[in-house]
Image (tube, rainbow, N blue to C red; front, side, top):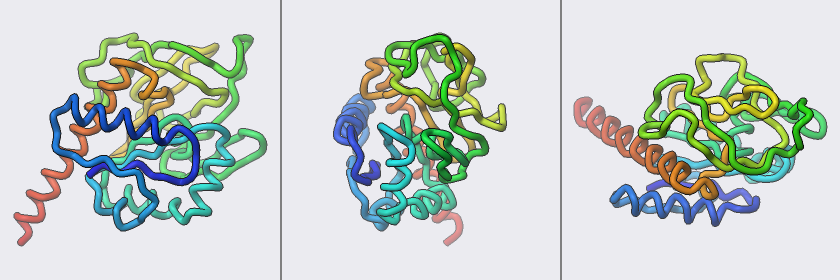
Length: 221
């Protein structure tokens, strides 16, 4: 089971449909569940944290729903987690969007507004420049195009957390990874083949992680 966290924000249905399509493309027998139930979240093989709109509204909704500590538990239990768009931004420590907002603190760094002469928000297609190999980016070419809509970017403190960068006035981290945490700034549901490939790769990560966990439990019996 793959869980998409439902915390009363927009576009979760489109993310759900994109993940369901990735399940079909991957030929996996996985159920995709949109839920705010902590028990279902913790019982899943992988968790998707979507996000759209303002950081403050997203982190407030997540906290008010009692799900911020659940996301941290997901990480502590080594369940693969994928943050999408503002969902990726919430993985970091602080956002500077319309004030100062505390994030989940799972990755070191801040969320900052673009400081560029280019139009803000960035809306449209832009490239992913690969910084290192990772299963999430398997079979994607250097410079692959994905679809972005955002005014703020993640300024990661640790270069080793950055899988890919995108140039919009400056090179910013657009894909990140640490331990069982992944984040993508682009919208996979709008990124056509590139978005589908990223989601299929995440499903493969979840399935392999689940199989390893099961093998470990058998060995420990």
